[in-house]
Length: 297
Ligand SMILES: [Zn+2]
Image (cartoon, rainbow, N blue to C red):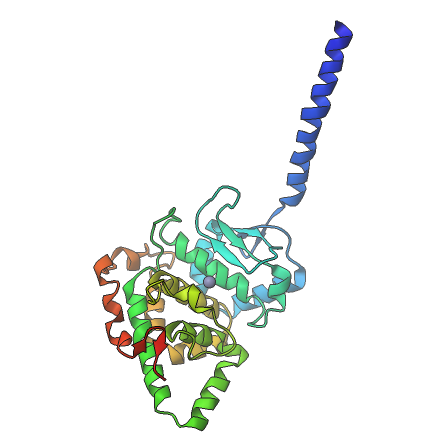
């Protein structure tokens, strides 16, 4: 009987305990938390890449940098080897905890500038952390018609100016959108025009538009915020283009950013007067220039 018991015990140890121990160890070796620029990061970044990130941090707009510092400890990078396009998960989901999933090796030689994905995705993180990292259905800071209304105003000005250009100047304008530093302008103008006016960098229409053929405001606002934040974090060439093309939207963004300084209390969000019923009202001027999926150019 004793022998039987010891066999059973051995079996239990080998079937349950040993694999459990091995599994826990494997988990540990995969999960190596580090800290880069104050952001808890699950993974290791190579030294050269970290130097680039630090250089961008040094060259950042001082207000954006202080906001970054304020929120860095609340942000998270969950995966630095993610094999698919980068994204920022706003709230914890089973098997997908809150944080950034991206490929650091790709970002090192990113055609939109080294470190673009790092600061863009963390920009989404700041946007969500500013309103307390709420769960599904909660608002992020950028979720306001103040930003989208300003965006429509800027885009309308560009579209009208473009319409009045002669053929050669239209060609040069679009050629300019293909420049490496114009990827934010290209992406956002693409969003506003159903990709009729865009350079190399763009998201497909399905990304920006709802089934009714209208721009999804939340997506537009969130991407505007993350794009502007990234440009402010040490990408001066993109930043000056953004300021020139989207002066009203950039002003709204700057006010948001200031409301996130360490001595403020995210007041921009708290004082936001926009209501759900205002959502489509912001469209009205801009939509006049539009057909179903973009303006007549
Ligand atoms: Zn984004």
